[in-house]
Length: 245
Image 1 (tube, helix red, strand yellow):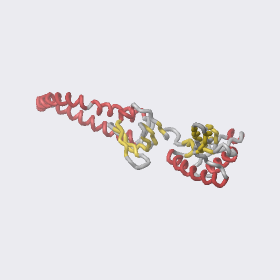
Image 2 (cartoon, rainbow, N blue to C red; image 1 turned 90 degrees about the vertical axis):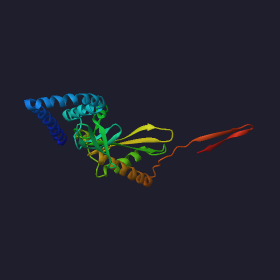
Image 3 (cartoon, rainbow, N blue to C red; image 1 turned 180 degrees about the vertical axis):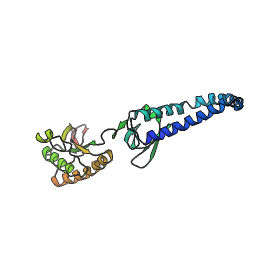
Image 4 (cartoon, rainbow, N blue to C red; image 1 turned 135 degrees about the vertical axis):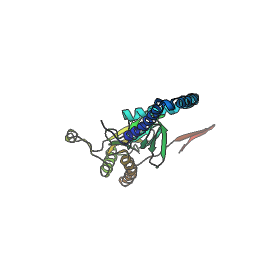
């Protein structure tokens, strides 16, 4: 069973809770203090009942925090996407989880909310990421030429990983597969499947490839199109005039 900083931190806090509970039991067991303890506990009971209704959310967060630490859907240092937020887990406690985004902002999420969300963990088993990088080219483009340009630029990037098996290499599979995925109104979309060691490396590689492939397309004469629209104006007694935008 693997343990980590989150498990140790939660264990420390649980021990603290049990210590306070044991102290209360010891005070109650001493006859000289029992009457005082009963009076204090009776008076505090009403307050606890009132606070209980207001603290339902807090208790839900605590229970969810215990489940997170016990079942370990993620750990401190994991790359997560949850509730529309992406980042690295910085801290897990009984009430909330802290996620650091790429903008170095801390997102503090209640554990009960995390338990109700779908969690995307990019590092729980294998940190490698297959980044999907797409490029639109015109219908006049030589597709083989465009695909070759994308593959060469991607393979030359230092963060690109070759995940081919020996069988893949024997069959002649490329290190960076590129597929024609859509035929749009004004462009064909090519998608490259590029592997990187982790989510951050994949994201930075994506940005680099956008620029590198654009510059390569400019040199190779591969056109990246923009939408065209033909508007027909009809006037009575006059032939239609076409305007291309």
